[in-house]
Length: 73
Image (cartoon, rainbow, N blue to C red; front, side):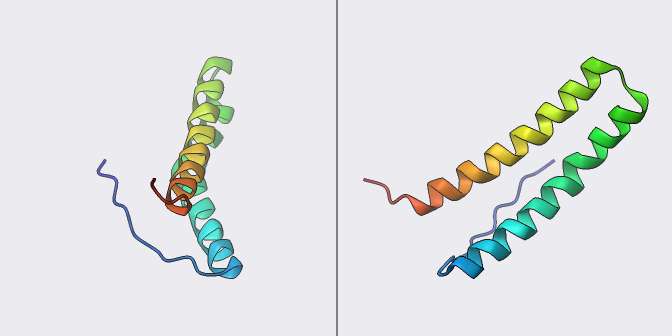
């Protein structure tokens, strides 16, 4: 899977809120389905692995935003 990055200028709280909503939807669409399948069909280890993948996707998104907000020195 090739990750594509889109540049967005966030100039207000509402811009950020809109970005966060859209990013959360994308993360849940990408990773949430795997978690639901694991919960239905998997064992505890598979559920833990897919939950960790969902959590990592959220952390990655937050770090991307933080990196975009902090100006390089």
